[in-house]
Image (cartoon, rainbow, N blue to C red; front, side, top):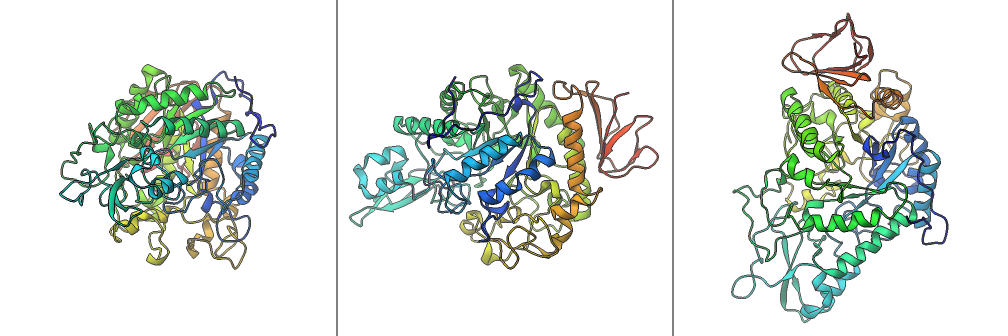
Length: 564
């Protein structure tokens, strides 16, 4: 196994010791997603950074999570919030330096926190040296083979090479102007034009990313979350896609698509797993893989590929008992043959926040525009989000919490157009509001913006609502009935309940609209999604999402109980 010395010559942080349970740490870990630009501002410029993150690590340790996932911290022009990377082995100056990253890793280890980072391998920034060389060298530039440069269709090449669409609207191809000033080839970008897709059949791309993996594993990261994993392979010949007449990036509906979930993508992940397995300390991969079925997702989790994957069918489904039970059962059944745990998640930097989503009439979120324009009932949404957190954290496997989820923050749906930066908004001509509403900087303390995110008088990069004064971490820590207090209680019970991590799930008979299951002899969870109250009988309540009276569970409420 490889020992870890970072590239500055210093000994990299040792992995967090195992807890002695015999289970690999990632199988039941609760990880906290940090979107660094919006987490904490350490230098007072209105942008979150690694100094701010480092200062708030004790908060995460006290919350009770097992580690953190850090969204991209690499150099980037920020055309897509850092998911357009211009250097995969450095830190964006906005966030700090490699020394700051090393300090975050050291401090996290000292607090017993694991750290995984985002890797964005499907594409680079259009400012990456490879792409700049591909443009500057003209049609014969060898760097063009690292991307998908193709001649256009039509008499003068004026039409895109195929009909593929971009996730952010419009065609997935842009035409370049060659160095001599003539209209030239087209390049592929499944996301923004500033994010040209890499060709993962190219040996140089494969070799260079082997070095990227080793660079970060050598610095001591515990794992990598792989962004847009199914996008990384394309069918040979780049044939036209059949979108069924729906020109939206609804990957959950796609079957046999030529640019998504293509079988050859698994060869890449087998290669990467072989690298990770040479390191001590269970270095892991987490796949972001929004595919059509649990069976397709399970392919990413074979023993020689990814370790875990986000459960998007669970995240995107409605607040409805039958739908939730179906996705839970389907997930557990499809993962069981491989012995792979599920990773449950309610939201992320790309999704509508649960308090808003569950307060709308449309509680599913299969596409970013689902429910857009509906006025949420935030009291109802908060009630449901509390119950949803209890359900998620009671399920077997791991879980992810997105920053601010533990505070019960709603989406900020009324941001002024002039502050929006999401390419989804810009590319759609404003037809899609995009994801900025879930990326507003966190409120830490105080009674008015910037709520301790930045020093007083400094405007954060996205404005915070004044109504967040009751939702600061400071205010919620002082309130035993707050969302934060609930999360802290749940995470403590999850961590301290003997045998919970190693037990599966068994359903109890229940009324329509009620989810009722045991985790062995360790815990019973009941969630009432029906319109009627439910009696809990004589069971002892360990924690509930709201205060209960007379052993009765009201609508949209959950409880953890002893197993009787």
